[in-house]
Length: 309
Image 1 (cartoon, rainbow, N blue to C red):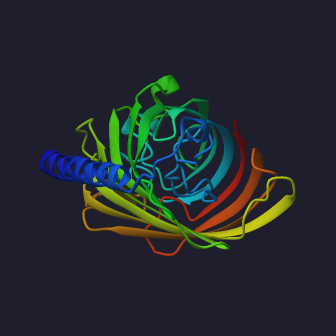
Image 2 (tube, rainbow, N blue to C red):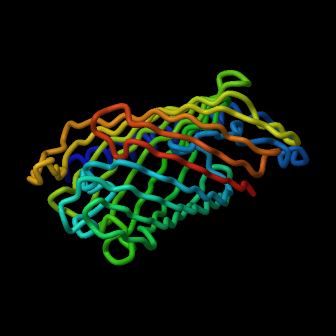
Image 3 (cartoon, helix red, strand yellow):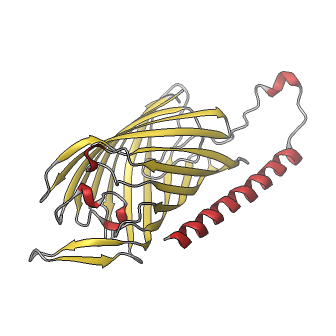
């Protein structure tokens, strides 16, 4: 796991530095000469809209977001140490249903960078182990826009979690780190394309802990007028390819088997609608379905609210 972590993190940081340098040079060379009176009115962030929910947005901004998820049929909950730790499910487990309530605060001191913190609440409903609920692992990080040339915004994001989950049963009981690149592209007025590519690594070193590559794309139709009610349909696709780690398989006979998870790929397709009034508040409702035999959960239902300030 260590060599994958070092390789992907170094590559992500290198691309971030190179793209940031190129973008800065482009801004310097192409910036028009304006008077001091007009500087304040120049819109330096040329793509100001984001519609996705299941993948991450590339736009640094001031935002308060709260979302509620219902996840069903996680048949291999210990896979890669990504969602649960051994202490979360001390008995061999064949299925877990989960509800998550996640609140995130993002603060952008400038149009180019933001910092964020996320705090989840989790309710676990396993088939074999006892139910559990409480505060999940705290997540935090930053986002930096390295390209902002119209109509493209590309950002580098670094996200980490710390093991703060209650009772030793709510979180993954390890630090995790996730560098990634995010894209926001509007080729025409009515179409928005967003994408992500992340490397995730668990730093706990347990028997199931590994690392993986996460990627996704989202398409949204429509815009958000300043003073009107609007509805925008959104479709998204996500994938996870596991690079190292393991999972626990509970067979119908009750036999338990440790399986190497490296090489497994999970694919999800999602659809939803984002609705709002003006540019400061909106609601999202969506559904995500696993397309592959391997899955984090077979079904995921989501309701979300965002306040931009």
